[in-house]
Length: 639
Image 1 (cartoon, rainbow, N blue to C red):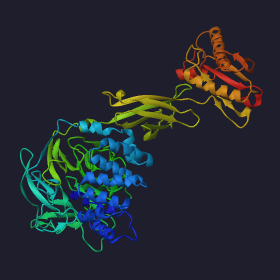
Image 2 (image 1 turned 30 degrees about the vertical axis):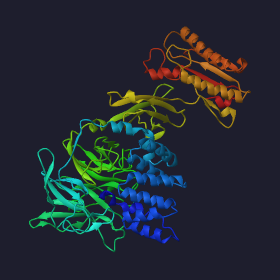
Image 3 (image 1 turned 90 degrees about the horizontal axis):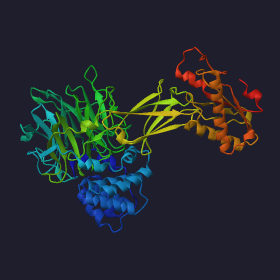
Image 4 (image 1 turned 180 degrees about the vertical axis):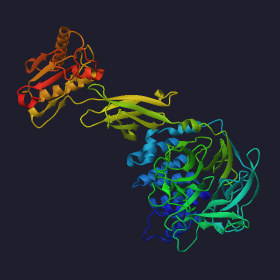
């Protein structure tokens, strides 16, 4: 079991119900389970003759905490076999299958999860790219990884830069205090320091200052640029604080050493805070918490100091980076605006995967990018720090020296291409005369999942930031028929944006309670043409349907032209337009004696665009029309 799993584990295990009338073995196993003594809990759970779903659920969690993912997945498989499972069980099963390397099995169960909980952000992201793992496994061949020399047989993780030449990290190798934590039979966590060598290795291992390391878990820590201020994570064993929460503490380096760490003001007995990532000036930081108001297990937060140097109120980073799962171990590169963090809720290869998101000028973060192989594996990969495309990270992958190990990496660049801003943009227009439609509702879907919703501006324009991929764009507005446009991934190519045009059409027939209140919109024509445009055929189909449902209705069709060309030519052109409509209607079953055909050339313009007047094209378009009138409703149809 990796020590990092202790962080916020309490929140997960306390969601399980307490059974009544349990056997002695069952009660004792539960007692060990809640004390994080998983070896003893596993032994007793396995010895039970009749295991219900809850026993298998706890067995799976215990095996997972001990790092035995195959047995954890098998136990969750038994939960599924017994039936009565919920969406959380399905997600956990898919998650554990991923950690065993069974990506196809994980995909199948994620499909079940997506059906059970379609609005969950994990389901939405999965449906957008169900076979994402194939792309991630291809990896970045330029990245190099090296297991650093100071790793030991236990857990070493959570590296932090310290005055440029050192790395301070968290380790369970055992220091001043030899107490052992039952969760993994390893010593409690302490902070250690090692020097960075010219080739990126770590050497000269020694305990970090003794006044910081205490009796129980200490670390990880984060430092300001000058190395005289730090914030560290520490678990508190206090009878007044239920469930031994994690808190953040601050300490300053003075002449006599580091001051006694003091808890930060936003800690609470009701939730945990940890994994600080300080800014270089020490005036702000990102951190992790399961405080109320989050999205799931643990979420990422941001907090700043005020003018007096006091920490303010934490701000949740929102759904762009946080999920219903767990986000942990943030690191922020202030020069590039990159936020690196680990998550088990975003689409990944294993347990925790490392992701990166870029901060925008307004402080928001874009869609996270999975760093892929070799940074991420089917195991837990986390706590990555970054400088000039190299740095350090933690992992419990195969081939390490201990439980969690620290790895030095270099040439991590490819993700920057994925962080580029790509846009899906376009214009919403009306089919009447091609004018922009303001305030249209525009929705962008990926694999039937809504990824963006916005409104067109006064110019009918819209733009949304996306990843290159396949999308469907839908536009709608009251009084118009909706429109759709399809965007394929290949349309992006080397471009950073794709343009679409969405043409909204007004329904030809606006139904009303009585026939004489029904409104029939005009049809419009291209310059010097009398054919019916494709969109208008759909409108005429509405009129056909209306007339078939109301066989008593007769309709007058009157066509017009703009003022360009001669009167005689326009008179004939308007006749052709009327007959085009008549022929279309009669060819679809409407009797000719129900239609009255009229035409007026350019004699009935709707605006000032007569001969000799200069007008924009859209105004001429208003005059090129066929109008409809329900006969027998003269008063109601009169303007």
